Image 1: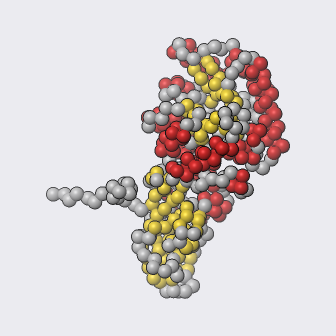
Image 2: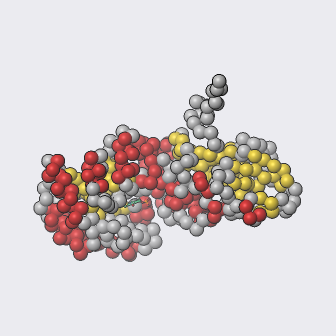
Image 3: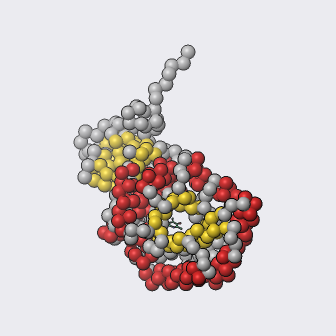
Length: 385
Ligand SMILES: *Cc1c(COP(=O)(O)O)cnc(C)c1O
């Protein structure tokens, strides 16, 4: 006979996981950020909420549902897969796919799931037109112009010819036209040049009689230059309460949506000269208390933070002791009054008066806050609070 195993978490806190590492996503903070962004815009400027890459690691489906509730124009995803995931979850708003439709029959998949593709060459445009004729349906797309990002998009030279052709294809509708900035956070004159190129192209498109939504602004542009707002803006990082450059928070006050937490699962009192973890890179210089946490680089907590990062225990900063391992890491909790097994530990977020921001970890890792939250691996449960 088998005994019924214990359930992973109590029903009350809705934590159906066993291993004590989880991400909390605060949906009221998400709504707060959306509201702040809205207030920053002119009344009729639309918002395309960028909830790509699993919502920058926050959990895409849940936040997409919240964005729909808030009444955004639509949501942007990275790929057809992400679009399908949102459709299957019952999300009914406009879904724009940022990624290139390669291979080309990805366009059929996008159309089947009612996703709006981004197109950037004649081959893709003709393929969509053929599909539209076959389905006897007008199919929508957005045209991407590469005004200086150098990633994807029609080159400005080719844009005029392509727009001319689009204007002669009634079976497809260019619902939007857009470009992406390379240095919206650091170089106003390069950004202005990108914007000028874009304006020339959209002017030409309007003269052809095309009607579309023009959009260019990511968070950095949205915050730093209101002339980039146009018909619609595309905030990503701001939705999550993070900022693309240091002083951005002075211009738009936002609340970080994500907290990453764990618990102390092991505690030991050791004497001076005790070595911690692989490579013995951490050696105690006095009697110390070392705690073990069930989170490691396989969870996306970068190994680069070994002996560098801090975590919060009982409202106090505690340093990481030794190398971060795949599934666990150690911290030095010497001097933390009352420290116990089971104590909640904050990796990102606030506890008492202390706060660890994604930006802090990003600096230590020599990267950006975007990568910190995107790297939190899929095995870490996301809980909406
Ligand atoms: C990711 C992305 C955005 C959002 O950028 P943030 O800096 O997160 O605001 C906007 N537009 C495009 C095309 C993107 O790829």
